[in-house]
Length: 96
Image 1 (cartoon, rainbow, N blue to C red):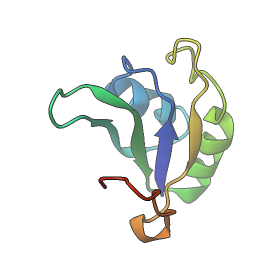
Image 2: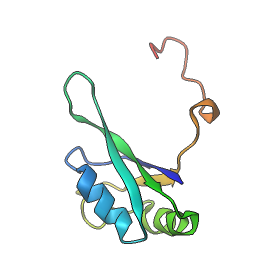
Image 3: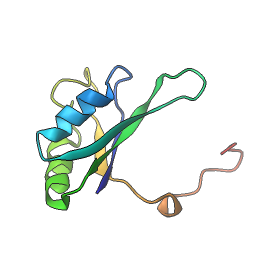
């Protein structure tokens, strides 16, 4: 299952993200999305877990928390990632 993790502190690393979710099962990958030009975190990422039951437990355990103290006062939003075609359209005037 592909999991979206939003509202991350910019200082959270991919390894920290992997470790936080690893407490709930095997993590295949953990990726922090970065700005192409600056390389800085955009404040969200994705975690891939093969076992859906473990992924569901991780989502329920970590959603709306400070992710084991890593997120420095910010509660993360964790849910199953939607396919690109399933996401709502951006408003008019958006460049993307």
